[in-house]
Image (cartoon, rainbow, N blue to C red):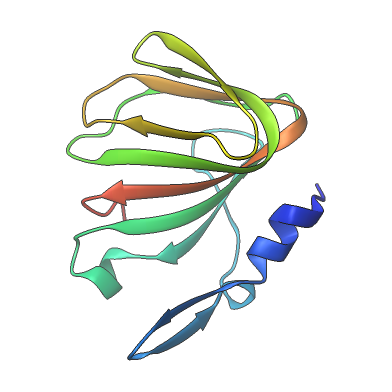
Length: 129
């Protein structure tokens, strides 16, 4: 799955006074439940003391993250590239670059990639992992 904007973002870095983490040095991992979904754990609870975590997410064309909730995390999605939809608390939201969606803790949500795949920057507060 190739997308120029997302791949440029994937070459980014997390930079704080303590140092820099290059995104390209972080391996992709397959989602343990949803086929066609891969995650790159950019900032984890180890770095933030559990306060928040940031993840790049790529969903293959026509694949989905099915209905689920997070407890106690609030989750945000920033759509970087691709297309699809998110069902957030029963409301369908069209996903395309520039869209931001917020799922409070305990709110049901699901994400469906369109024919271009879907590329997200997901953030969790407190940290997911």
